[in-house]
Image (cartoon, rainbow, N blue to C red):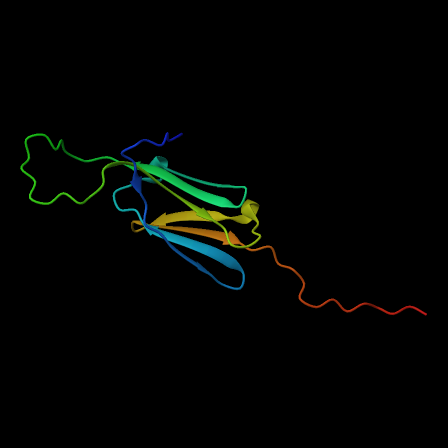
Length: 116
């Protein structure tokens, strides 16, 4: 799916944290199927786009409160360190999207052999 951003597009709330080995992005995405999500990593930026459809028409309903966002949504996040997108994974389980992006591991200490 290709999602075109629109003026009434919702912004996805995310949590981002890092461990010694990876950057982890999580978001609650209740009511969205994996087919309606797109996660891309390009030029140090993660983009999550998707859409959530209402199960019923909202016409004729006298809402007292309407806070749930229906329709398309997206979120972009600039990654803070060098990562390896080729080993990244995205999992949607129990309404929570978890994206794991491994950091590029660099040697902390390199001991050189001294030649005579």
